[in-house]
Length: 374
Image 1 (cartoon, rainbow, N blue to C red):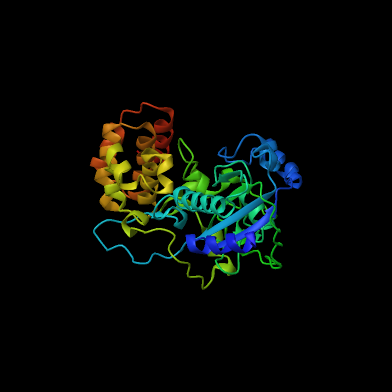
Image 2 (image 1 turned 60 degrees about the horizontal axis):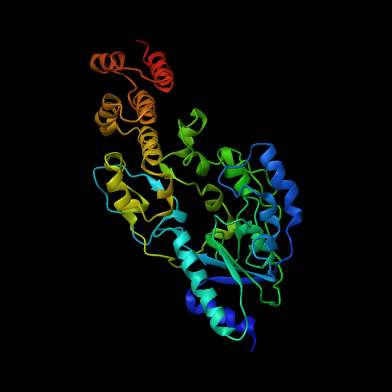
C-alpha cells in the first residue's frame, strides 16, 4: 500500500485543500528569531511560551517521524453582501467569517487521524494534532511541507489559494516520504510592506506583532491614538497585507464553512447594544468571539467615529452616562470629539457635566475640551 497516496486521497475526501509532508526534524533555525522577538517585545503574547517546544517536534510526540501539514482554503469575498439598513456596518476580517476555524480545521485533522489509523490497522499509530494554538510554528511546518512559501508578511502563500488558508498539522510516528518546498516566492515585490498602515512588517517574514492592526483590535484596554483611525471600520482583525498581495488577485477560494454576511459585517450601533448573552448566542461560534464582547464593542465605538456617524451621538452619550465600562466610556468621549465638529451649547454642557472616574476618561475629556475650546 502506498500510504502517502492513500492519505492524500483521504485528505481530498475530507475537504482538505492542500496537504504536504515533511520530516519531524527540528526547526532550530527559528530559535534565534523566536528569542529575538521575545527579547525585543515584538510578540503578541498569544504565542506558545516554551521556545524549545516550538522547534523540537519530538518534545510533543516522542516517536515523531513525520509532520503532515494541511491547509483549508477560505474565501476573502462575501458570497452575498449584507442588506443595506439605516445603520453603518463594521467589518470582521475573512479569517473570522463563519464557524471558528479552530473547529473547522480541528475536525478535518480529527477525521484525517482516524482515517490514517484505519489505513494502518496493523501498526500502532501515534499522532498529535495542532491548529494555531499548538506549539509548532504552523507557517514553518507548512513551508517545509510544500504547502506554500512564507511571504514578507509572514503568511504562507500558495499559487492555488493565495494566503487565505487555515493551517494545521498532524505529527505522526509514520515514516512518509517528505515533500519539497515550493519553488516560487515574493521575489522583489514589497507591496505588503508598503501597504501596511503601521509598518509592522520587518520584510523578512517576521513582524512587530504589537504594531499589527489585527493585534490592536484584540488587545485590552484603551487603543493607542496612533492606531484608532487606521482600523477604519474593522472591529476584528486586519488583512491589508493580504489584500495587497499579487498572489491573492483573482483568487476565488471555496467556502470553508457557511458564512452569515450579517455576522461578517455587523451593524455597529446594534452591536453596541448586545448583552453578554446575546453576543455569545449570535457571535459565539466565530473565531473573533474569543476576545469577548467588550473589546469588540470598544472597536465598534472607534469605527463609528471613523465614519463620522452622527446617528451614533445619542448612543455614545448613553454609554458615557451609564459608565458601565470605563474603556467604553473613555473611547466614547473621544468618539464624540471626532464626530461633533461644531458642538452646540447642549453638547458642551453635556461634556462639562461628565463624571470622570478614570484617568483614561480624564485624558480623553481633556483632548475634547481642547478641540472644542470650552
